[in-house]
Amino acid sequence: MKIEELQDKANDIREVIIKMLAGAGSGHSAGALGSADFWTALYFGGVINYRSDEPEWEDRDRVVLSAGHYCPVLYAVLAEAGFFLKEELDSLRKIDSRLQGHPHKSSTSEVEQLPGVENASGPLGQGVSVAVGMALAAKMDKKDWRTICFMGDGEQNEGQVWEAYMSASKFDLGNLTLVIDRNNIQLSGRTEAIMPLEPFKAKLESFGLRVIEVNGHDIEEILQAMKMARVMLDGPTAIILHTTPGKGVSFMENKSEWHGKSPSTEEAVKALEEINSH
Image 1 (cartoon, rainbow, N blue to C red):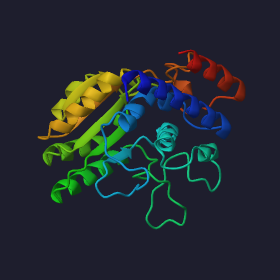
Image 2 (cartoon, helix red, strand yellow; image 1 turned 60 degrees about the horizontal axis):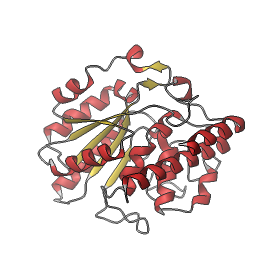
Image 3 (cartoon, rainbow, N blue to C red; image 1 turned 90 degrees about the vertical axis):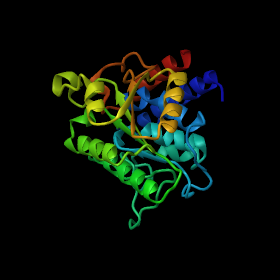
């Protein structure tokens, strides 16, 4: 798929996200919209291996969503990729829906599992530990599949994240790619006002990670970074994804109040008009 086609698809994904959130009446808008370019590149840019008609295919790459509140973009992409019917997207956050407000995954639960979801999430910081475990298991079993873990920058407040980074470095997990959405907001404000991360790249490097910084809205840059991570096998790679939260909707962009807020019907109409004009 060409870069222009991927960009168009990312905007289509943004439209779906707005409709899902407006229909649900709750959810997280900013991060999902801001990361749509990355998720589109990941699933439709030829950088990961998966089979939508065989979700538990043994040799699939594992995609771990640690920042579970981003799930509207994951659900939209999975439906577009054919893991389940798009009509099911209308059930976001409804009782008994497979599309919960944070992804659900359990081998013992009576609730039907959503194809394509690799991990349960909710408490921030836990997904990266899950991803480290998956990558270590693949290395021990001499498997070729890779693990990609997606996190938010506010999530870096959790000490567990940094413990996982140390483990990833210790075990030389070259099959692990850590993607951090650096959108500079979290639930209660700007990240640098709440718990400063900078110098973020230097901190990650000091924990033994190879770091690549990209414009999170430049699909070509994203694809290049993901491909670089695949060939650098002597240790884990972290990709800092610089994004605009609420991307594509002017009244949502760079505003922390849209971290955990969904659009009203009227706001959704305006948002869709703006996205369609791009």
